[in-house]
Image (cartoon, rainbow, N blue to C red; front, side, top):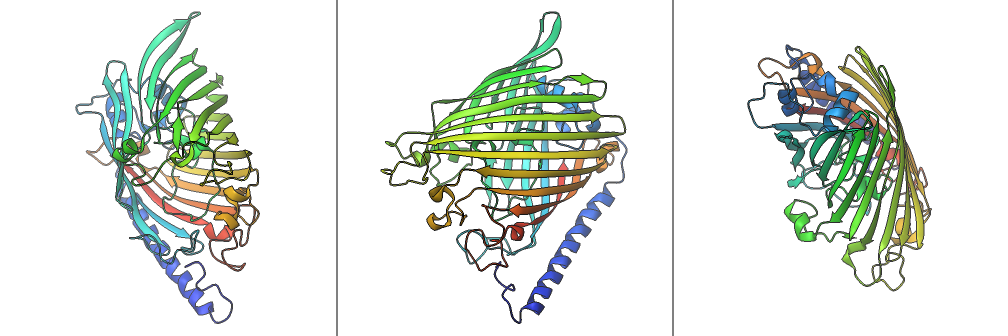
Length: 487
């Protein structure tokens, strides 16, 4: 595992052998992705990120996406209009399929929290080449003003099948003070999946990441990680004067039985969302020619019964986000820069209750902050280069994060940060191989570097002696190769 080959002494040859095998595995994976790219060069007709949208609208990928799934101004308005725009020659139901073969290499071999001796079934200690997911879509106009973006995802890695982040919306146009607008009703199962800017969690950067690495990563706010596919919500929104967006949605938790039926958390006891959790969104997007600037805020408040342990009150989570996005959407290239800051205020009435047999927090009041800054440059909608920085910081809590109580931090800290780099080739910008005019693909390489984890760099949880393994921040650095194939 992460410890092997890293102890001082006569381990140099073993480390060199591992390095050569890693290089060989990476080379083989690169050859596979290069073959996919070469095969895709036979191009003749336009394509779109979700082919059912292309068949419905007759629009090319470049109309809706800079580098999918990042949206252009036109793509944002297509989504706000309820996925109902026509113009194509679709002869079939609005269905599509996505397949995602991937290769993952981490700087240190498998050595997760708790020191498990072997990797999960079907996986190696490192250099895993897997089909990460297979997704079916019902995406497009259903009837009249009703449209959907529904995903059902299978994971060949763990054998799961689940309803993925999805939404359905009914939209109608209106006029106010002489200006046009959309008014819509949206139903979804993951807060922010309905949003049209790539600053909110559901479609924020990076839009794709390895599902099997890293072993350690910083904790996230609830709106980033805990509500997706665990709730169902319904709400209303308006987009007025091609500039102002406002939304209010209420979410309710799903029972353990409902979650298991939908493929989520089989056999686990989820945190129970009490009552209705409100979600809000306000954004202003003025624009000048091909330049678009968005400034906005969003947030959610929820009361949680952790582990369905009744009788000790609720944990209250208030997430408040501020975001901004600048986008230049030119004919030949596009530039997008995004900033997001989410502040989570936690009042842990249940988790910090000393009478609770499942007490999991020391402090009654905690704070967690998640900051992201990233940008992308896309040339001819075909070549994409992206980079980003992430930072998580918050209140120290011995029970919540401390290694002595089963957490990951000797410093009892959630703090961590890192960098993400992504380079991608989108071969079907100018068309798919005949006769598959609506196929699409994104073939890319991504590297994630962890600068700090849980308040430290080396041996942040005391799991091993300093100097090796995933218990150092750098041990979780991840090289990720992917092919995002949609048809």
